[in-house]
Amino acid sequence: MVRGTLGAEFAAALHRYRDRVAVEAGGRRWTFGEVDRWSRAVAAQLQAHGVAPGDAVALHLQNGAEFVVVDVAVARLGAVKVPVNPLLPADTVRHIVAATRARVVVVDPALGVELPPDVPVLLVDELATDGAPELPALSIGSDARAAIYFTGGTTGRPKGVVHTQASAVAVQYAQLLEAEIVQDDRLLLTTPLAHAAGLFAQSALLRGATSVIEPGFDADRVLAALRDRGITWTFLVPTMLYRLLDVVGAVDGPEDLGLRTVVYGAAPITPGRLARALEVFGPVFVQLYGQTECPNWGTRLAKDDHDPARPDLLDSCGRASIMADVAIVDERFAPLPAGDTGEVCLRSPYVLEGYLDDPSATADEFLPGGWIRTGDVGFLDEAGYLHLRDRHADMVISGGMNVYCREVENVLAEHPSVSQVAVIGVPHDDWGEAVHAVVVAAGAADRDAIVTWSRGRLPAYARPKSVELVDDLPVTPFGKVDKKVLRAPHWAGRDRAIG
Image 1 (tube, one colour):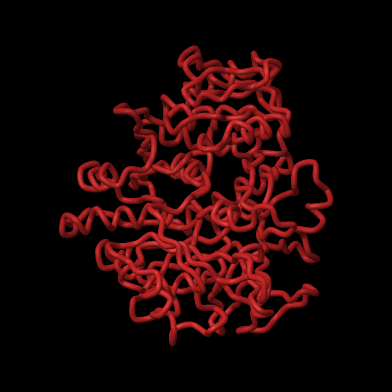
Image 2 (cartoon, one colour; image 1 turned 180 degrees about the horizontal axis):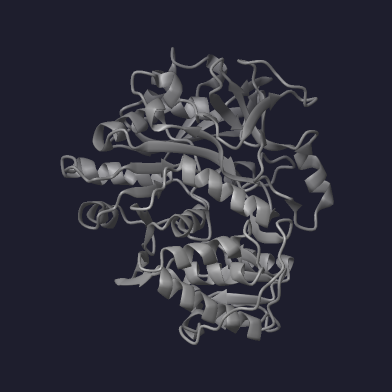
């Protein structure tokens, strides 16, 4: 297999770093050499199940060393990885397996999802662990498929996003630089390996770093790991950072942890909470902005940009990544100047090849020159920093005025009684939609007081007309606030629903 494919890059790294620790999980350690032998044994096992280059192999697994090993095995066969988030509902899992025509599904039976009887299954506890043969040389080109990822499905059924070997390797080159992963790093991974954490585990393998894998996120366990296990790098989504800050606050702040890098993303973070995180952990934060179609690194807000004295920067998601371009276009897809709001578009060597079996959606995604549409609304400032306003699907149109929910959320999050907030549009007979705030309170909270407080801070059309207090905000399996769930009861039985 030629270099420039994932399988070849993994094989080279596993040999190069064979004596270093590659993975820690469940109280055990595996060296790169052990992962090499284990992955070759699993690759031979998959071959015995009929897996050939170009075949899809679905991974429906919980976090653990097994996920990393199967990932490598699939790449070494030139097969196509289909990671299936263990948090997805059973119907969605079956949809993904059917849509990709998976040759084999590697399954953790503890997840309790019943697959059709004609789907070949390899149970995780049946994975081979020894008898690692030399794999036959494969001729896999850079244009061959490497992975099919599925979108979050926040506005409809998840779509399969096809990435080639070239794009899968290119995103790793960008990530090693932008996520600042170095050989002596110990990466704490708590989010699903079937999502962004799996790409970080790949980076750790390629760089010779160690992945410390937890089954899931628990704020107390994470804080203990940061204190006791020599963690230097971790990835969080904003809700996890909020919970970690709550735990840290309860114990008066942590000691010097030796943490060098915290990458965060997957959803916006409020500037106020980010400023608090900087006080607690120091200048260790890197923000990523991307999407399944352009994984992780569309833009990057660097550590030096996380300056509490520059709230304009904290309100942004950074400048174009080292291997990406960013543009803002109008409704006719013409480029807009700095300061003008429009749709965010990205261009990179790691954008998708296309949507699985959906040429119409693929044609709609791409613009001339290799640009792809993101569906996000935002603007670039004069210095090239991207400021997101909203998703097209989440924008509220009230009385003909565009209300960008993220801007309203950032303002309301500054209220001392607001811990978390999500803003949605609800039906209104006169205005079409009215702004509605769903709030997780920090202590006692008064709905009317929050509305009153927003006066003078928001224009009249953007102020919440109603406030709902909840214990928690629903999130998708990908860590984003699930506004589709929040909107559903308000739009039930109507001909028109938002998003």
